[in-house]
Image (tube, rainbow, N blue to C red):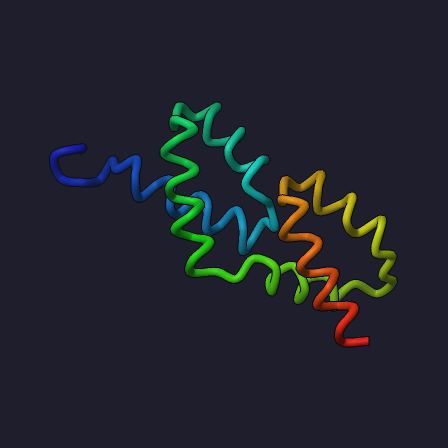
Length: 102
Protein backbone atom coordinates (compact mmCIF):
# COMPACT_ATOMS: atom_id res chain seq x y z
CA UNK A 1 0.00 0.00 0.00
CA UNK A 2 2.88 2.36 0.71
CA UNK A 3 4.36 1.66 -2.71
CA UNK A 4 1.11 2.76 -4.36
CA UNK A 5 0.94 5.82 -2.06
CA UNK A 6 -2.29 4.64 -0.41
CA UNK A 7 -0.62 4.80 3.00
CA UNK A 8 1.04 8.20 3.20
CA UNK A 9 1.84 9.65 6.64
CA UNK A 10 2.59 13.08 5.16
CA UNK A 11 -0.77 13.38 3.42
CA UNK A 12 -2.61 11.87 6.38
CA UNK A 13 -1.05 14.44 8.72
CA UNK A 14 -1.97 17.30 6.38
CA UNK A 15 -5.56 16.14 6.11
CA UNK A 16 -5.88 15.44 9.84
CA UNK A 17 -4.63 18.93 10.70
CA UNK A 18 -6.79 20.67 8.10
CA UNK A 19 -9.96 18.86 9.12
CA UNK A 20 -9.12 19.24 12.81
CA UNK A 21 -8.73 22.98 12.40
CA UNK A 22 -11.53 23.80 9.98
CA UNK A 23 -14.19 21.24 10.87
CA UNK A 24 -13.53 20.31 14.48
CA UNK A 25 -12.18 23.72 15.54
CA UNK A 26 -9.11 22.33 17.28
CA UNK A 27 -5.76 24.03 17.70
CA UNK A 28 -2.21 22.80 17.37
CA UNK A 29 -1.76 21.62 20.95
CA UNK A 30 -4.75 19.26 20.85
CA UNK A 31 -4.06 18.08 17.31
CA UNK A 32 -0.40 17.48 18.04
CA UNK A 33 -1.32 15.24 20.97
CA UNK A 34 -3.90 13.34 18.92
CA UNK A 35 -1.43 12.75 16.10
CA UNK A 36 1.25 11.76 18.61
CA UNK A 37 -1.04 9.01 19.90
CA UNK A 38 -1.31 7.82 16.28
CA UNK A 39 2.48 7.62 15.99
CA UNK A 40 3.18 10.80 14.01
CA UNK A 41 6.35 12.51 15.32
CA UNK A 42 5.92 15.93 16.90
CA UNK A 43 8.43 17.64 14.61
CA UNK A 44 6.57 16.44 11.48
CA UNK A 45 3.29 17.70 12.92
CA UNK A 46 4.76 21.13 13.60
CA UNK A 47 6.18 21.41 10.07
CA UNK A 48 2.78 20.56 8.57
CA UNK A 49 1.04 22.96 10.98
CA UNK A 50 3.32 25.79 9.93
CA UNK A 51 2.49 25.12 6.29
CA UNK A 52 -1.22 25.05 7.11
CA UNK A 53 -0.90 28.30 9.06
CA UNK A 54 0.44 29.96 5.92
CA UNK A 55 -2.65 28.83 3.99
CA UNK A 56 -5.26 29.46 6.66
CA UNK A 57 -5.49 32.70 8.60
CA UNK A 58 -6.11 31.16 12.02
CA UNK A 59 -6.93 34.42 13.87
CA UNK A 60 -9.46 35.20 11.10
CA UNK A 61 -11.02 31.75 11.54
CA UNK A 62 -11.24 32.33 15.28
CA UNK A 63 -12.80 35.75 14.66
CA UNK A 64 -15.39 34.22 12.34
CA UNK A 65 -16.27 31.52 14.87
CA UNK A 66 -16.50 34.05 17.71
CA UNK A 67 -18.79 36.31 15.70
CA UNK A 68 -21.27 33.43 15.38
CA UNK A 69 -21.58 33.03 19.16
CA UNK A 70 -24.99 34.12 20.48
CA UNK A 71 -23.61 35.50 23.71
CA UNK A 72 -19.99 36.51 23.64
CA UNK A 73 -17.94 36.79 26.79
CA UNK A 74 -14.30 37.42 25.75
CA UNK A 75 -12.76 35.70 28.78
CA UNK A 76 -14.97 32.61 28.57
CA UNK A 77 -14.40 32.38 24.83
CA UNK A 78 -10.63 32.73 25.28
CA UNK A 79 -10.61 29.94 27.87
CA UNK A 80 -12.69 27.76 25.55
CA UNK A 81 -10.24 28.27 22.68
CA UNK A 82 -7.27 27.58 24.94
CA UNK A 83 -8.88 24.28 25.98
CA UNK A 84 -9.35 23.48 22.28
CA UNK A 85 -5.59 23.84 21.81
CA UNK A 86 -5.17 27.22 20.15
CA UNK A 87 -2.19 29.42 20.90
CA UNK A 88 -2.88 32.46 23.07
CA UNK A 89 -1.20 34.66 20.42
CA UNK A 90 -3.77 33.59 17.82
CA UNK A 91 -6.64 34.04 20.27
CA UNK A 92 -5.47 37.50 21.27
CA UNK A 93 -5.23 38.55 17.61
CA UNK A 94 -8.81 37.37 17.06
CA UNK A 95 -9.96 39.29 20.16
CA UNK A 96 -8.25 42.43 18.82
CA UNK A 97 -10.13 41.97 15.54
CA UNK A 98 -13.39 41.68 17.48
CA UNK A 99 -12.60 44.79 19.46
CA UNK A 100 -11.79 46.72 16.29
CA UNK A 101 -15.22 45.84 14.86
CA UNK A 102 -17.08 47.25 17.86
